[in-house]
Image 1 (cartoon, rainbow, N blue to C red):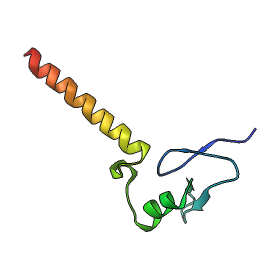
Image 2: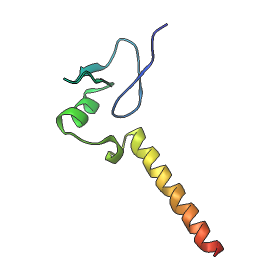
Image 3: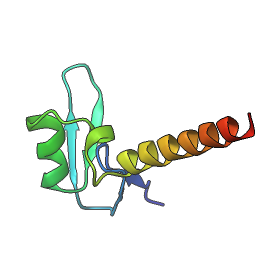
Image 4: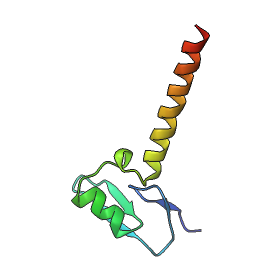
Length: 78
């Protein structure tokens, strides 16, 4: 059974035999599914939370919208 890995930047599942593994000097292992993700994280030093097309950015946006809706509902009750 092959272990399923996720891209460290965008969050997509990486198929076995594809992608790139990057090991930092401190021993942290990062997996990337494409050169686009590698370049954005390592070379351009971008954060996945603020990059629109990543799963982490979508999760962050969803949580912000839920919190705003909950706050609006609470204000409406008062």
